[in-house]
Structures are given as C-alpha cells and as structure tokens.
Length: 375
Length: 223
Image (tube, rainbow over all chains, first blue to last red; front, side, top):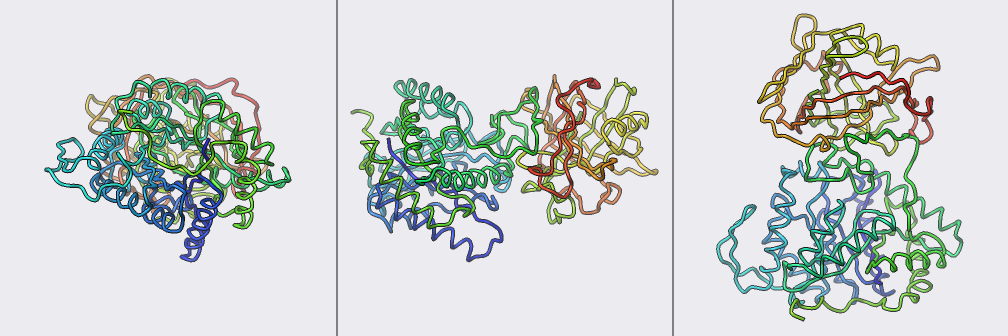
C-alpha cells in the first residue's frame, strides 16, 4: 500500500492574489513534508474556471515546483485533460517529458477528459467527443516518448513525422493512469494497460467490485504503451489526531467543505444530455430520468464510507479494509478551502506517518516505472 | 416537452436568485415547455423560465416565470403547489426535423424558439431536477420544492435557436440568452407529486428546510 497526497487547490473567496498564493504556498509546504515523511506521490488536478473548487489550471508548473523542492516523492498529473481544444497532444508529451527530466524520473502521468460543462464549454469542446480524443491521446503520447520520430494521421489531430523532444527519463516511459469517475472507465484503463486513478468517492463494496474487474481485465490488456501500469489508486480524505473527537471535528469540516464545493459544480450531464457522461458528478448519485432526484435539500454532505478520519487506530483499520479489497494506493485530500489551519494539516500528516504508515510494510518512496510489457 | 438551455452572461446572480439558493457557474436559463394533451384540468400548454442553482448541496432549478394557456390548469397548479402562472398563448409544435415553441402575450410574441438538428437519445440520457418557486403561504414567503416524476419514452437532443425573445416580458430584462447550451425534446408521462419540502428564502437549506409531507400520495397524472 502506498500513500499519496492529492491537490485540487481550492481557494476560498474573496479571490485575492494573496489568498491564491497562500493556498499554493501551503500546498508546497505539505508536499515538502510529505517528501520527508515518505508519502509516495503528490498529485495535482487540471481544472479550469472552477471558482473556489479548484484554481489548479497549470498543474505542470505546480508539479515542477514540487519536484524542485523535494527529493523522493513522485509528482503526478492527476490528470492532464486529453482533449485537443485544451491541450495539444504534442505539447502534453513535451511538457510531461520535461517534468520527468527535471524531477529525475519521478513523473506519474495521469490522463482525463474533463467532466464539467463549465470547462468543456469554456474551451468549446463537444462532450460527445471527449472519450474518443482521450483514447487517441493515450495511444499516441507513449509513442511520441519512445519513438525517435513520430507521425500521426488521426481523428482529433494529425502531424507529419517529427521528433517530439525531449524524451522522458524513465524507461520505457512514465507510468500512465486514467482518472476514474464514471463506472466503466476502470475497464477502459484495464483494456489499455494503464492504472486506474480513482478520483470519485466510492464505498467498499462498489470499489471492490470495480477493482476486482479491473485486475481481471488488465491481465488480458492490449497495452497502449511499452509498459503496463496495473495499479489501482483511490481517493480519500485524511485527518489524523490522537483525540477522535478532534479528528471528527476537523475531518468533517474538510468533508463538508469539499462536498459543498463539489456539489456546486455544473457537471456535463446536468447541462447537456449525452450518453458520453454516465454520472451526474463525482459525488452525486447517478440519477436517471426514471429515478428522479427528490432528496431533502436540508441534508448536507455525509462522511463517505471508509474515510481516513480519526485516531491512528481507526485509520489503520480503515486502510486495512481498503488494502483487503485490492487497492494499491490511497491518495489523500489534506484540506479543502483552507478550512483546516495549516499547522493542523501538518500535524495530521506527521501523526499519520508515525503511527499509521509503519503498519503498511511496503510503504516507501516509489522507485521506478513499472515493468516493461515484455517482462 | 421541449427545453431550451442557454448560458447567461454579465448578470447579477444575487438579484436573480433568493439568498437561500446558490447559482451554478455558469448560470443556465432554461425555457421548458410542456404540451399536455390530458390532465385533471384538460389540455394545456405551459412554458416556464427556470435558472440552474443549488439548494444546499442539491441541484435545483429556480422558477422565474411561467405562462399557461389554460387558466383552469393554472388555478389547479396554484391551489396544489402555490405555482403562480400568467395567461398567454403558448404553442409547442414538434415536426420530424425540428420543434417550435411560441409564446404570445398582450398581442406580441415574447418567445419564439426553434429546436433544430435532432439527434435521438435514450430517455435515460435526460436528467430532470426538482424546481423551486416562491409562494406566499399562511406562514409567510417560502420556496416550494416542485417535484415531478417524469417517465420519458422518447427523447431527442437539438440545437437551440431563440429567434424572438422579449426579456422585459419574462420578468427581468437581465435574463437574456447568451451562449446556447442545448435543447431537448421528449414524450413523457409526468406525475406531479404533493409538496414535500418548503424552504426559507433567505436561509441556507441545511437549516431552513421544513418537510411538510412524508411521501408522494394522490399524485396528479398528466401526459
């Protein structure tokens, strides 16, 4: 079991430059501490226009700063949006390769297709096409990294033969992931031999079913790259404190702040009827025309099942349960909208590292890319 | 039914929504027209202007204005749901390759919209959300949650084209369609459910929600 930290970089109003800088500075301090404590990876999302929820629109810059201030922790795109209106695939390959070089081969390369109408419409993206462009990106980019020269004649982009430079440091290339929100995306990951980077909260039973199916299918994959990444990561919240009531107080604040900010996103399916997006959101229940959402608006966000909030003993028990269903990595939100004071976030990380991490023997800084396909 | 969705731009959202509701970003305006051939009040055509928002953590639509061509049905909606409607000529015409909605009030067209370039969808691809509207009740002004169970049997997605729109007539000159999002059409059975939740208009839903009925009963079926 590996433990990572995951950043949306949410910013409370008012959006003063000083507030945005504080969020970035706090995040960098958390990454430096995570590096010292033995967390495996620092992940950063790519989002655009999502006021309050995420001001992390240039993750490659943030992750470069993370890499320059640390020695061991890996840096993860969680994830690059693979639609050409937002990111041309050549630029994605180039930027990722530079980040891998600068970090000394510590890049984890996550891919995604965006899930909000706010972002897709902002870049004039047709929601029906994002799965197709994502698929084209994840097949092309590893070839840009591994082939001396590359040419492409595709649907969402074409290019004459060129040398895409530089090449990443890791061989054959950085581990590839796809963010998994909608049910079924884990199968897309398995079929292509890339890791399933969970970014939606799911209970134990649902996660176990999806993880089992992923591991079964990835054995039969037709890999898009020269290496298979067969890991499953899930997303969680972390607040660790000796006093379980104190942990619940701050942890629930984190869950509520994140949940409320998330609930205010305008997910694609809410605005635009399409079968390309199966879920209403990454926290909301999948509502359909036949099962209308009529819940009590007075009910707030609930503590998701399996949250790593509590004293060390409780968190150890929870993580062992995640481990038992085949999860390889857990990535933690440490804060949301800065509702937890920075000093408490850092103390929570230290306590987790001292009391929880030792119970998971293989927890250590990740060392290398996954095995080549031929191995 | 046919619905046209547009993004709004440059609007003062705080002036368009009560304090209890929070806007989506971007704020969407939706013109939803029901053409109802059978109901407890007979045939009617209803057109509603609603804004996308959140009540607490729930996706909702806030009703800004509704017009109807059968005031008996309007009275039924008012009596059962505190739903305020104005009288107008409302028409919804669905053709093979388009759908058209027209609203005439006071001798002039206040909405003329065409849904073009149809693409078939599965009815399950559509999302329907509860709406909220303001109502004067004995206990004071409240937001009423308007729940309708919708069983869609056929659905199409269209490109929306608003040809004529009188922003002032729709109650607020600030609501002007800016960026087209989508349109959809559907044939459906609609069951209006009894009011279950009332919310204070100036308080967050987490603390300002009152449950007034346990579960739907005696629904009014229309289609």
